[in-house]
Image (cartoon, rainbow, N blue to C red; front, side, top):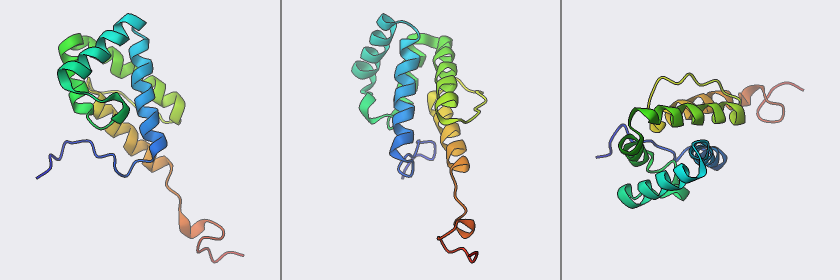
Length: 129
């Protein structure tokens, strides 16, 4: 049986998954290049985080950030939120210290803002001429 808290990204467009990955990398770099390298190495070696597959495995990255940064991981989450807000045009209120929670929130907002009402779209079942 699957864990209901596991981040499900099967339905997310690949461009959103890329934006999530890139925002993590940029947030790490905002701490300094050496810190970014250290965090990335720790997450890969201790928690088997495959950064190319993110956001799959984001919970393990959360665990790594908690171990290496403690409460300061909130800085990374806040930075990630700012980056995603700018790139995706969403306004995410950060109420968490976990990247996985932030990503769920952003994915939900993104899906809500990109819905298309097919009934009212010309040429897609519309009765308008």
